[in-house]
Image (cartoon, rainbow, N blue to C red):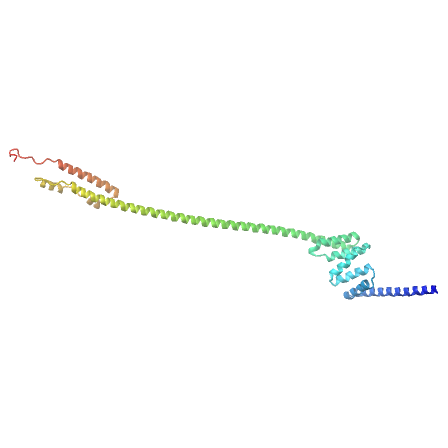
Length: 300
């Protein structure tokens, strides 16, 4: 009886296990057909059911689920599946997982990360030609990117140098312009000062000339008065001779100066000479003897 019970128990378990295996195989087949047909949503549904509901531990199912997510553009979910497979003991499967992670990182901003993933893929499976090709391709892109960045840096440095040089030239031009304006202002100021000094000097000369003219007029007037004062009064018996002498006197200095067009200094010299001549003439007249009296006539 016990033996029969055990046989029935194992039969039931075997039947249930056979049904599960059959169901698992059917879901795998269905998901694979959907993936090949491009029905990635259905493939994801079947693969997810196998992993999340039936709890099967099949690394190939996880890989296929990652591929289905990748085809749908759900890169984060695909990356999660590939990342789990990097811990696999299957070197070939692990190489594919790293290769897929490198493909997901094949972006200009993450080329170094992609190259590292492809390098790990080649390490785990040196025969993975796809990983090797992608590694060389990314390496070339990274080199070109570095050279381009260097060129950009050099261009930026050159642009900065050009800008600094232009700013320096503009600054120098502004300084030269300011210096030129200052020099021009200084020249105008100097010219104004020179003009003012010239005007002041001219005014001073005019004032001096007027003062000299006034002094000359005063001197002529004083000379005239002095001549009148120094002129001797005629004596009795001498009027005829004095009148005759007066008729022979030369013209006055003022009349001579008006008739002659001479400079002021020369006029003064002539005037002084005339003055001395007149004084001498007067002195000579004083020395002339008076008319001798007739000796035959008495003194009274």
